[in-house]
Image (tube, rainbow, N blue to C red; front, side):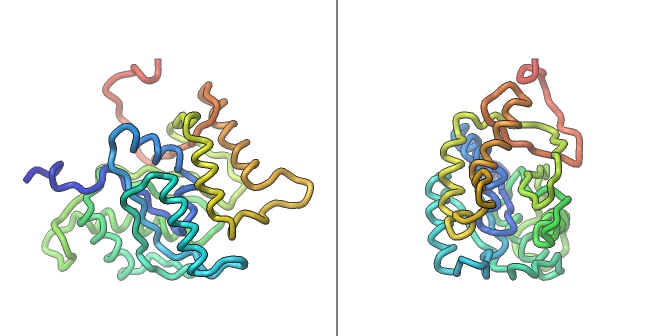
Length: 236
């Protein structure tokens, strides 16, 4: 069996909490699926406790958002919310998911953030990617090394992104907004009185990135490494 036949996913988005994938990269997820790629989301934690949430509420919200995204693969690693750490045991569990699902591309949170869970998630992805390729180990599954890690923006800093690419998600913005709105326990009351709502702020940010590439809406993506292309067709 070839590696392509053995592969379950083309792209695996790793999210610290349910809703982070929707906030950062939902448009790209839907666009990739429409282009025929197999995309999955792995939430590292339940996201609870939160002020207005519960495990049951968050599970219902995640299921609703997953349906809007059209995902057929979504799992939760069950690591602790608010105290996520890049421990050896967490690295092992994540590396074993990589070896089982064999995604060519990993998507992780941007590496700078005020939220410790987000920083820990990125450290875990990078370390587990390395471990996943190790031979002569007691990790479950066959060695596998995802070819690339890309980073999506879902940050708690007022940070102006410097992305490697911006994806045109104009045709997917309304579905992205609907998926985020599923997390009512997290965002329904977000935002100060008299100011734009949280969802309106996200729309404005997406419009800014769309403007930067001459589109209606966009999603920025970063990379620590150069991104190779075989043609300038999509640039010229």
